[in-house]
Image (cartoon, rainbow, N blue to C red; front, side, top):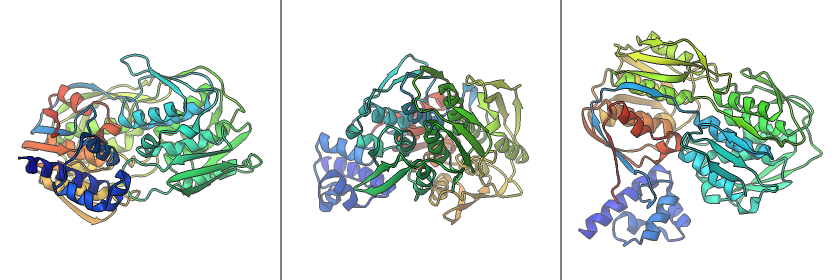
Length: 508
C-alpha cells in the first residue's frame, strides 16, 4: 500500500514537472538534490518528508504536492445546464498593472474590488517584501496600498517574483526610484519564449540599461538620458505599453508613445495615472501623450473596470452547455468583435442598454445568451490588437467551435505553444487537429465525454478544458488547477451557483 501511495505521488510530480517544461536535472537543481533522487521520487522509490513535498510544490508552481490551502483538483459531473445571473469581476490584468503602478505614488492608493487571485497575491507578496504596506479593507476586496519612504529592493521576495510574469512591470516605476536594482526573472504561464526586449527598447530612452545574469534582470539608470523624440514601441504589447506609461508618468516632461496598445488594462492604467495628476492624452488610441510629474504624492481611490476575458469565459460556458444565463457588467467595448463573430456563427442573445463602470469611462452591458444552433464561421478566427478580437479570448473559440456545425480554423499567431494545449479537447471527444504550433482545425459538432486530464500550464486553455468538462457526459477530473486560480477568483464556486456540479478535492 505504501509503494502504491508513493507511486501515485511520483506520477503527480512527474506530470507537474513535464507540464512546467523542466527536466529532472533542472528540478533537482531547484531542490538542491540530485537527478537520480528526482528519478527515484518520480518512480515511487523514495520516501518523502512533508518539508520536501512542500518544496516540490513550490518548485513546480503547483498544488499537486503542496501542503497549502485550496483545492488541487476538480471533479466535474455533467452534462451541465446552467441558469441564473452572474456579475463579471474586475479585470485581473488591470489589477496587476495598478499594483505595479502604485509604486509611482508616495501617497496611499486604494483600489476597489480587486480580483483576489493568485497572480495578485504573488505581487502583493513582492510589494510587501519591498516594505510596502497592503491591507484588504473589506469583503468587497478593496485594497489599501501604502509605500514606504524608501523601498528595500535588497529584500525582494524572489520566490513570489519568479511565480509571476507581471514583475517585469516594476521596471518602469523603479527606474525613477533607484539608480541600480535587480529583479528576478519573470515566470507565469508557459506560453513559449516571451522576449523582454520590447520592454527594454521602450525604457532605454529613460536611461535604463538591463543585463541578464544570475537569474535576474540587473538594471542601471543613466539620469542624463531622457526621451528626445517619440518612443515607438517595437511590439504593440499591453505590458510593454504599461511599462512605458509608468516610466513617462514620473518623467517631468512630455513623452509621446507610438504604436501603443489601447487594450482594456492599458486604459485602466491611463485613468489611474490621470487620478494621480499625470496628463495622459489619446486614451483608447495607439498614440499616447504623457506629461509626467517629478514626484507623485497623493491619496487616490480607483476602481478598475470589469474583465472582458472573464466575461468571454462565462459566455462560452453558456454556449457549450446550451444554457441561458444573464451575465452582468460585461465591458462591451472590449467584446464587440467577439460578439459579432459569434452572431455570424448563429448565436442569439439579448443585450441591455449601456451603462458606465465605476471608473467612469468603460461601457458595460448585461448580456443574456440563448441556446443556439451554431455553425462554423466562413473565415478563420484570429486575434488582433484592440479593437480586434482579444488574444486571450481566442482559446474560448476552440470549445465553442467544437459544438458548432462544420470546420473552424483558429490562428493563434502570438504564442508559439498555446494552440498545442487546445488539442487536449480530443481527450474529451473533440476533433481538434494541430496544423502547426500556431494553428488548430476544429471539427464539430462534438458530443463530449468525461475523462481525466492534467490541467494545461496556460491559463486560458486550462479554463477551456474546464468548460468542455461542464458539457461532457459523465464524470471528469481536472488535475492541478493552480493555473486557473492565477487568473480567476472562485470560478468553480461561482459556476456551481449557476447549477454546475464541480467538487474540489486533493489526493494528498
